[in-house]
Length: 131
Image (tube, rainbow, N blue to C red; front, side, top):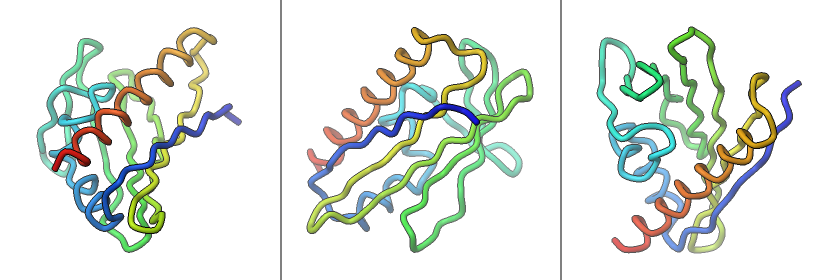
């Protein structure tokens, strides 16, 4: 098993609105700089060009449960599973991201990834609360 860290943020916007925004892969570059600065649809999936090479990303199908999981295929062919959820919290939303520590990650790399995810979640909050 991989160790994991769950990161979350409260967003003062209705859950259906947050989910609708997050369920559109083309919106990810607006807030998820830890994933990619650009994302394009190619064939059956999505592709991001990064300094590490081309990443292929598969997103979960739209659903009524707030599930926004995605699977990132790295240039070496390994796949990183990224669980992402939205949960209604009265009139707002909790966005919950589970970060799995990959086998090649040392403590510093895992802490760096967690910092990038936290920065992305903060960017998401700023973006959605400013609308």
